[in-house]
Length: 448
Image (cartoon, rainbow, N blue to C red; front, side, top):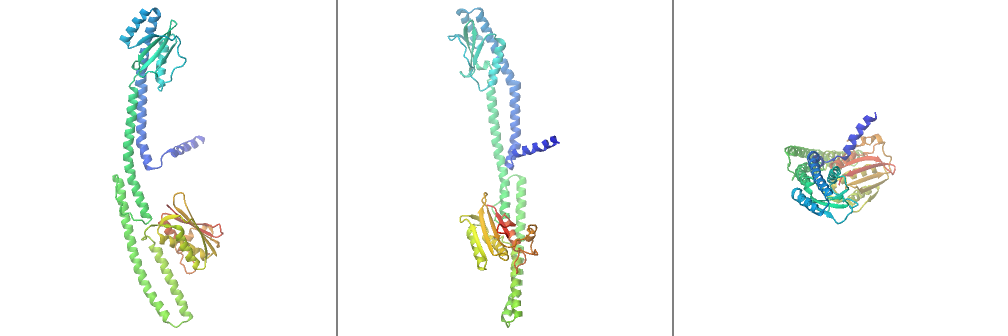
């Protein structure tokens, strides 16, 4: 059981460290194999070639030093040392001399490549039975080796290429340069491909909010261009459908309003009576219902997006509600700006306020900016509210709850549906909740 839980936890832990964007994942797919290949090649090179060659070179140098030490031990005279030094210089490229200091240094300088020092130390330890010390750092291109012999310090200066393979650093440098070059090329090409997808996503999001995307053109790989062309075709079909629906609704509106106008005129000329007043009331309600139907079907898609001060827009809505006798208070920052379709958002807020005004005595409209640059607008009231399980039911078009909060007496149950449709057309959402004032809270969340 624990093993199964471990198998589930490990992939989740790995996923947390993986990039979430297409750009990051594409780079990971390209760069990770290159990096693994470079590491494998470098490892094989150092393990199978460089270390072997370095070990043999260090062993050879240690053997030559051992010969010089033994020769000097057998005959420590200056004349003998001169012959040994001359032979070592000519045949082995070693410089040998007796150091005036008869004490070996206490510490050995640390090298950036510890493997080199370890290889040379092992080789000297195998060939020498006397104390020794060496320095691979002080003289670039040379190794300073000191051996204690016959109470004196024999100092030997050897070229670095006699101790290890000096081309290993150049190999690593070229590997790093090649990796950086390939990574740069990969970043350039992947970024161009991802940018095409980002432009398509931006165009789709803008079109979903009702903004114009006339400048968008297909770019990128064949599959991305194919998706972009499909988006443009879908956009054209949707716009054509909206234009046909708008034309049809305009015709319906004209055809319905003509007989209503005639009826209003006849009632205006008729003798005043209770029946006439009742008919005028029915006609007014019919006109209001027609306006609601057309507004719900038409939407506000043709309005352009503008950056407006949210406080001013909410102030206009609250003034309209106050004229109807409702007490409305606003709590909005004066500098809160938002790119919206003003008339559409005003209509959504008006519907929410009108819905609250029919069931409450006091309404509070508040708004604040979100960390992402968007805004949240709250419409709270002190009315009776509705049960939690009927929140979604209230948004259904033409829905009339038993103790309804989504329409007034002359409404048709479209106020909340229209408001949610407007919020979603802005890329946001409208939801209901319980208000701190005891009634209903409507929350409009809009993106930045």
